[in-house]
Length: 85
Image (cartoon, rainbow, N blue to C red; front, side):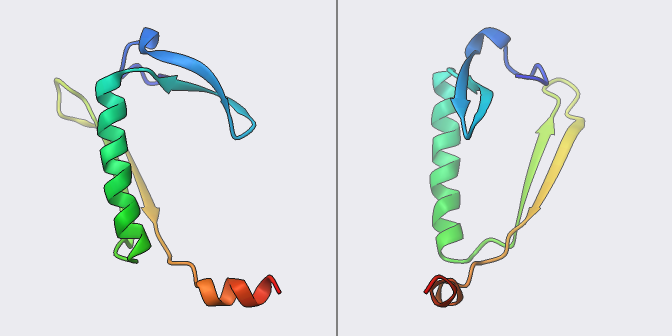
């Protein structure tokens, strides 16, 4: 929404996580994101992801507009169970 990649009218205001957010209403984008999220969840649960890179590329120029790198560290479930007792 803020970057103007998709038309503003395809977003709606929604309260999430205590914040007001703009959320897509585009069915194609929602389907795409759901499939990516499902695949990523499987990899995360198996500990197969070490780094996730999100790149936003200009449609016409193919120029990288933004690049985000997320380093992923598996959580030690046994350690967390002992800390919560």
